[in-house]
Length: 585
Ligand code: SER
Image (cartoon, rainbow, N blue to C red):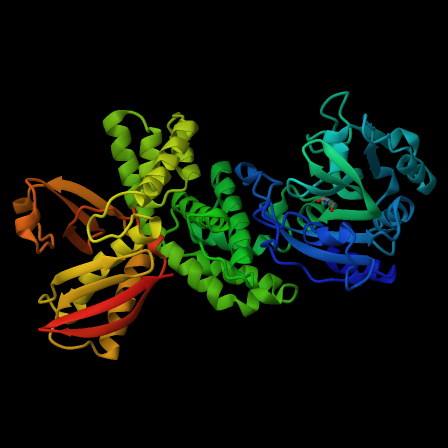
């Protein structure tokens, strides 16, 4: 096993094995996920002493979403494991290169044919000189001059991981797969597949402090990286990365689910996407930080990954719920190396189940909506894409994929404008007037407002139809809701109401507004108890099929935005009125 061999080799070379850091970076706002083994080590590369010493080795779980569009082919992954060894101001180029060479070619370790290995080094520019030193060390260990290539900064410079931080020139090792050269100029660095980058030794001796500004670091470091999945695939002469031992069982299980004997290339691509994304989603959820799918930042990446799996499953005609089963395989495969997966197993399964439940229905409805818009208008606009996002939870990329299948392009700038316009709305509203019993319209009050509609309906379901709103007052901290009921609720009743509201939040129900006459609103069963105050037309807000109320808004577009609802206390305010105070998380 490559992982075990690597760790053992460097342990013999006096490196301390450190465990993989979290996938969710600490104290680094410049990136969403840990993208390389060096990432969590940045403070130590910058000079802080590491508790485990100056020589470290590990296997780091990484997420890179930059290439997400390419996942599905034979080599791209969003989740992967990276092996790395580090010198924190200890050894530098000579020892690093010698060790790399020994690990690659010595029969005790990988024992690769030295003739199949070539290397690249930094060719130099105005700021940093050509790396003759590395080239001469390579010659010394046994690489002939003709297999040493000098490449520019775009190829042979690594880092920083985020916008600023430690970086430096690197030397990369390539394995000749034996394929034909794609052209006479084909050489290491070419993407045709002949030369495979197996390992990267970065000589981290610079710190990028701002755009085009580099400072020399106090200490000279080494940071190396070897991607496990790709390396295992190449060394075993496999056609795709999806054949390796840690991924194949997932692929096989997905194919079982599809009940397709001979998947065509498109179907294979879908299988690959699912296999990659379920690994990524399981590892993100398996992190001790318990990140949940959401519409923001890391949570949104997680949501996109999960929703994309469901969409690909839909393309493959998988009928049953399948995410938790696949996640179990990932957990089983890796639990000994990453015990957090086993420890967080119930959280992983619960979150995947919930998200699958939510989105499977929304996907069906959203696809119907998409087709309806398309057949009515012949196109899909940025506004439509935004509607699919807010009402059906379609990540933009799903809509883009659907549009591309119909040869349509969506104006991304316009989509962004819609998105920002929506945000501005809630910002503007904060400065706005008092309406609907709301003290202001910040997004929290909006969320609490929709939660209050859910609360009223939940009370009616649990206690009976006699429940009627008598007043409400909402601030950004809490909602206060007065309603007709003769006595305080029992503990069980309170819990049932709270649970029902949370269930409706989890169901990610779309919130819709329709303008109509009050009489029509009544006919449709909309709640509204202030008849004399209504104008000629009223707006009726419905939350899925659960609640319908005459109201001036504003409301969230989807109940999932509310997140979590908590009843804080109740009070009997006399004459058959109960007051509930509740908040959201
Ligand atoms: N940070 C470098 C890379 O990711 C080497 O570890 O390739």
